[in-house]
Amino acid sequence: MSKSVLIIEDELELAGILRDYLTAAHYHVETAADGVSGLSIFQHRQPDLVLLDLNLPRMDGIEVAREIRRAGGTPIIMLTARTEEMDRLVGLEIGADDYVTKPFSPREVVARVKAVLRRSYGESAVQQTIRHADLEIDLPRHQVLRAGQELSLTPTEFTLLATLAAEPGRVFNRAQLLDSLQGEVGAGYERTIDAHIKNLRSKLEPDPRNPRYVQTVFGVGYRFAEA
Image (spheres, rainbow, N blue to C red):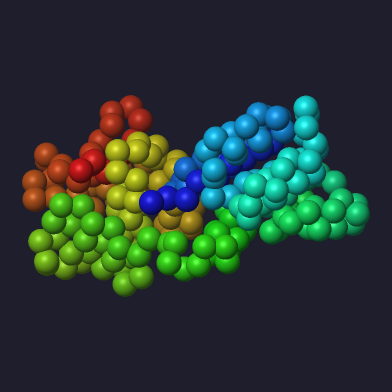
C-alpha cells in the first residue's frame, strides 16, 4: 500500500508541483492551504508524513507542528522561505525530521520524503513485489514473471510497468510516466512513452491489440488494470 503525504502549503502553485511529483512517486497526496485546514486533515486522515510550511495563514506552521507532535510521531518535513538559523532550530526542536529551505528542487523534496519514510517506517514499508492475476513484478530483482515465465524487459519498460502496476486503476499522463523514468531515456519527449508502451505490450500482453494489463485512457494516458 502506498504511503500518504499531507502537504500544508499556502503557495498553491508550489503545492501543486509537489503534489504532482509525489503522486508520480507513488504516494497518496492531500493538500491544505492554511494551518487550521491542514491540522483538521491531519487529524482525520492520519497521513504517514507531513510536508509543512512554516509561514501559514490562520495558524502558524510552528503551532501546527506542535499539535502534530502532541498527537504522536508522524514524520514532519518543514518547508520554508525563512533562512534564519533560529527558525531552523525551532522547527527541529519541536520535532521536525527534516528541513528544506525555498527555493528547492521538487526532486530533492521527493528524495527527502523517501529517506524520512525509510528511517521512520523501515525498509519493510517499501513494497518489494507486486502481484496481479498471473503477473508477478519483483522490484529488487527487476524481474517480471507471467504465469511463471520470465519476461525480458528493458530497464525503461520495467520502470513503466512497475510505476503503473503499483497503483492499479490510476491514470498516469505521459508527462508523469516520463518523469518516473528519471532520465533513463535521456531528454525524451512525452510521445516517446507511446513507443515504450507499445514495446512493453508486445512482451507483456497475450494479445497486444486487446491489452489485458496496460490499458489506454484515450486523451489522457495509461493505467494498469484493476483486479
